Amino acid sequence: TMLPLLLLLLPAAHGVVQLGYTPALTRDPVLGGQTTASTFVLDQPRCIFNNYGNADIWLVVALDGATSNFSNTARPGTPETAFQGFPDPVRAYMTLNATLANYPCPKPAGEITVLRVGSQTSCAQDVTRPTCNGPLPSPGPYRVKFLALEGSVPVAETGWSKPIKLREAESPDTISTTGGGHSAGMIAITTILSILFAILLAGLVAMLVFWSSDSCSGSSTFSKPESVTVRRYNTHHVYDQPAARL
Amino acid sequence: MAKNDDCVHILQGLLVFGNVVIGMCGIALTAECIYFVSDPHDLNPLLKATVNSDIYAAAWIGIFVGLALFALSILGIIGVIKASRTLLLVYIILMLITFAFEMASCITAATHQDSLTPELFLKQMLERYQKSEPANNSDNEVTKTWDELMLQNHCCGILGPSDWQKYTSAFRHMHSDADYPWPRMCCVLDAQGLPINLDGCKLGVPGYYNSNGCYDAISGPVNTHAWGVAWFGFAILCWTFCVLLATMFYWSRIEY
Image (tube, rainbow over all chains, first blue to last red):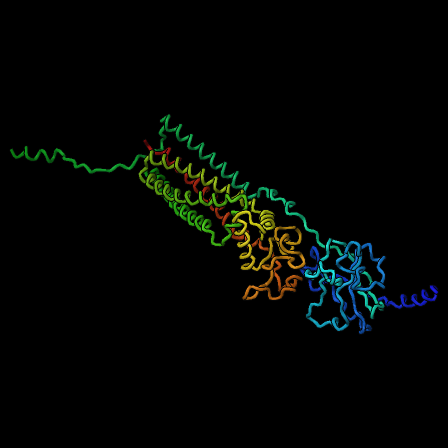
């Protein structure tokens, strides 16, 4: 009885259509938060699932090494695919449930159509919400794919994305603040000013030596400006006149 | 003799002119240092929080040196016109002391200017911004200063919002990465102080968050002032050097 059952299941398994699309991080527009320490941003799968208007499109997020172990028959909303169990023991979880109506085709120009994985913090610890889009617990790397389920039967899937690595934050203690060095300007100022000051001191010393030795006034000295008084000269001519009268 | 008198008068004229320039530069130096110390850009808490705030010490020295230069230049003019050896000797010695102080101020300003690297401010911001239990009042001041800085200059972090991603911080201990990839102040805010598009800000969509760093806004005013103190002081000192050398020559030629 097992053999016919297996034979029945095999066509269903082969019935999952491999779509040629690979999920990727959003490159256009350039986003500052494309990857953060616990979130990353994917392009929405627009115009990919056109033939599956009745399906639920799920995002599967898996650890890099767990992609081969993931089975498309996994059901979302169960403890085996619950976000709260990720990454241990759950190696891949399913989240971001959507339908084709959420991803209209073609994409309107000028709109930013992205999926932010890890944005729901409110339900991250809530086991009653296993499909929570919670923040990722470690830097990864992770791989994602989209899976279309009709009821609980997988009908189409995209390929696995390239490994996505999140940002790792370092401690601020690693920032070295002592490497300022000395700029050329500061060295120039110090050197030149020291030389100038040394010359002035030498000049002062020479001056004082010059003064104390009190020698060689030099030929080109000049005198202090003295107050010049005009003295009146009385010539003999003036004094002789009264004598002549006598 | 006539030629000698002419030389004397030219030398006296040059010295008087030199001293007038020194006097005016002294006033200008005082004014510039007062402007720097009064801190119109409200960056004082950030600079005080850094360990090396000796740029303010250099500016204070600059104020007094400027006034001293002005007073000494007047003394110098009187001494040159009267050709008095004692006055000029006093002038030269006091000028040398002022020269030494101004030299110290310039070198301090230049050295500590070099120490205000982006890394210094980055470390301070990461360690103190929005610290949950502020150890002292200066942490609150740092947070307030940063908030105002980011609000008024439309900037985020030191080199950019990625500073908050690259390093852990006191802010990161308080707020989760998914909800707050960077502080709310980095978002473009409306008139009520709320982000115009919170999701856009969290995603990092250009136009909804400030993507440039604040280092230029900080370093611009500090650099201008510090280099002003350092290089203007250096220029004054070079001019003073020439005037002092000429004064020494003049002094040695006065007949006692």
